[in-house]
Image (cartoon, rainbow, N blue to C red):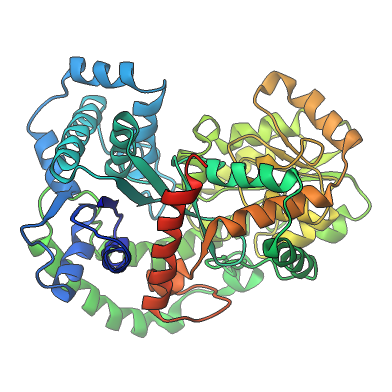
Length: 517
């Protein structure tokens, strides 16, 4: 078997380990990689001498970008791609990469001014497809594996695999405990899960049915945490408004010295054209100075406008949790709804009269949006803003309906017995429309909301089918904490190699048994 692994930043370490694990299970003759963000790649090379041997084909995002900077796109070649692929795929590839369609501060602030001009973006797209075709020619893969698909190169790998009929598997978090799911496209819902869901809906019962029952009971008792869950932020509480940062000045100064040394090292070593390397100074300043200061400004301007659970007690309201930006759920699963202010306006003005819309900020977004963003929300006549330091669950439990674009709060709401309205693509849209209503035509929003609320019917069997389908077609691994080494919530601890082996066996199972089953 030949395989290509398309990685983003630090996941190169995981995919290299995955290839070695697969090689112990099957004959893996030829391997290729797409890698992004040179700073992670150089660290990986230092840990993995001999990686760039003669039998490993590699596409590096910064080299592709460098080639794009010295040329222009070939319109006929791009048209040929568009003619061979379903409509929208090429723009999907560009929009999926936040570094292309957003500004250079995307990781620190909402920055909508693109880094690339239109012609530059098309040249980058053209060169990415060319580089990926060359990689496929070299490797002749039977299998392509990626994660979420949030860079142009990763999406190009999916497009070439689609064009050539090569099995493509996209890893993505399921938001159910620590299970990592698999799909045959970068989008939701996964066809692999859909097929299994239909089998359970048709009467299949196995050991996963009992596991699903236990999960639903645990979630309703109050433990819906999944690996990587973000806790409510403290930046917007009264504590934030009192914090002036003076007590941390010395610590910041000491850290800044290290940051400056790292910045010099990055500037010397980072290749030209690696737009994934933001340096160290600006991220440090945003995290420790600019964003906390902005969060305090926002809190000061909104503290008299926040609505509390007590304020809404006994009143009908719909609950809308904002998405973090940039986020795959918007750029990939729901790019028609990237303007969340207009999404909120549409929902608020289509609710039953007398029902208000309570909007809550994403915990990670504090200090990244300007006060004017929230003021525009408050300018919508029917909108209230919840204190972001409160948890989402109590708001879900008290809501008449939960509306969201494509976030995981919608799934928790469905489990807790609340009608759920979705706009974008979600994995849980497989649930009956009497529980989860996906609206695809905005002119029908009002009638769909009224119908969902009046005709809501909780279907426990459907929930069991969904959870069992997801878990039985997933890999129970700690992707973020164990494999990527990030600091986040994790329910259990396992050895790195053990998790990689579980992932390898799941990938092989998906390729041999689950794809086109």
